[in-house]
Amino acid sequence: MKLYGKYFKKYKFPFLVAVFCVALEAVCDLLGPTLMSNIINTGIEQGSLTHVTYWGIRMLLVTLVGACFAVTRNILASKVSQRMGADLRYDLFEKIVYFSEDSADKIESGSLITRMTNDTAQITQFVNGIMRIFLKAPITCIGSIVLATLLNVKLSLIIYMVVAVVAIFIIISMKLSYPRFYQLQKAMDKVNLTVQEYLIGVRFVKAFGTYDKETERFEETNTNLMQKGISSQIVITLIAPLMTLTVGIGTVIAIYLGSRLFTVNLATPGDITAFTIYMAQILTSLIMITNIFNTFVRTKASTLRIKEVFDCGGDFTEDGERKELNGSIKFKNVTFAYPGGSGVPAIKDLSFSVDTGQSLAIIGPTGSGKSTIAWLLLRFYDVNSGKILIGGYDVKELNINSLRDNIAIVPQKPMLFSGTVAQNIRWGDSDADEDMLHMAADKAQAGFIRQMPEEFDSVLGSSGVNISGGQKQRISIARGLLKKSSILILDDATSALDAVTEAKVRENIDAQARKQTIITITQRCGTAMSSDKILVMDNGVKVGFGTHKELMENCEIYQDIYRTQIESSKEG
Ligand SMILES: Nc1ncnc2c1ncn2[C@@H]1O[C@H](COP(=O)(O)OP(=O)(O)OP(=O)(O)O)[C@@H](O)[C@H]1O
Image (cartoon, rainbow, N blue to C red; front, top):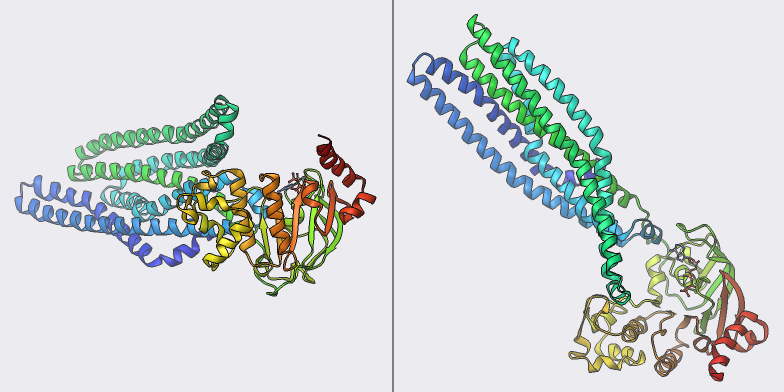
């Protein structure tokens, strides 16, 4: 519960006021049966209307005061629990935003959504419960036992036995519930993930006609969730009636023994009535206590899942020096394996260098480590051994934001957000004026924007669903070109463009090469050929480095790529 200390501190005052109100409300409830006993013993039994009125007015006042406390704690409980829930969601989101790549790989997005919604809702409900009823239950229970004992010690022995039996039921219920609730939340993760994956790949499902498979997959996760739900509910469903039965038996025994004690003048009718009301109050509070423990068990499971998120590693800190970097790049014997991967290095003992303003193409078969070089330059991960220098500085010694400010990337899969075309391009530079915006779009050959109904103010759907793949790529390239950076990385960024458009985009990009170091990651020889340097990768290893001409003389793999792609296309 250390996790919640910060929130408790923030809402300490209203929390404690609510708890105070709940405690006083419980005291008011506890006074009821004793006042009732007085009405019967001193009023009804002795036929005194004055006493009935006297105790009746007192009972009414106590009920009224109790109601005022109840309203106050309800208002405070709603406000505090909802605010705390919002704070927790905000902190979780902030944590996720600054997740390290390793952490992002570790917890699935579907599970993160369940943790942000269901688990925080569980905690909100628990806090609301504590403030509204949870404290009332133990106070009412203990108070009823004490007051019943004061009324009649002999009869109260029954209460002790009933409470002992019910306490055993509560312990069993908690032991059985915890693992079941944990499994329930995990099953919820799976349902979320299945729906999320379906929504992302909905077009593929339609194209492949795999509706039945998807429905089956959902059915499976949904049935699993249902089974876990039943298994967690069944414990409560069985324990609650057993508790009611135990208290019911206790009440019957109390009435029976009470009437026997009455015949020998050891109990009054008022005592017996008050005693049965206390028994009923004890039953209600015991059921409440069981609910408290069940909610506590669920909250414990949710807390563990939320803690897992907070315990995840964050992105590299902002320590280190802020620098204006030139675009020179040097890899010195770099070896790197993905933290969550198989352990086999994705990059092995890689060394190369590029000067400021040069263009470098990285070519190689799929999975050869090309994109990994880009992630390492952006310091999404740290190398296992070796060094990466940008502008002469080790990336580990640089302030992470200043490093990333100096690099623009156009990723393999264009990432577009719902919003206007202009907003999407301005991601590269939020201060860019209209002229800069238009210039970047022109360089990216994104003339189609002017044919859109609202031109640059046209709204793109989520992930740019309303434009073509090639159009998405051109908006993404325009964004990369707009960013003022000393290094521009194009990761297979022109794969969806036709040859003529690609050539024009390349021409425009090459024109800025003297100002920027341009890194082009590609599988196409035609795209790589014009670069000042070409790095040929195979299975994480550098197998060639030089100009197109040099590689055609000394790199077998490059020659093979050239022959397969260029010569065979000429022959065709
Ligand atoms: N997040 C990750 N966790 C574990 N392994 C990964 C991760 N990302 C990539 N890899 C592995 O690292 C290796 C290099 O991947 P990388 O994406 O750099 O290849 P690539 O040459 O860019 O491939 P492609 O041309 O298909 O994009 C591959 O074996 C891949 O499976």
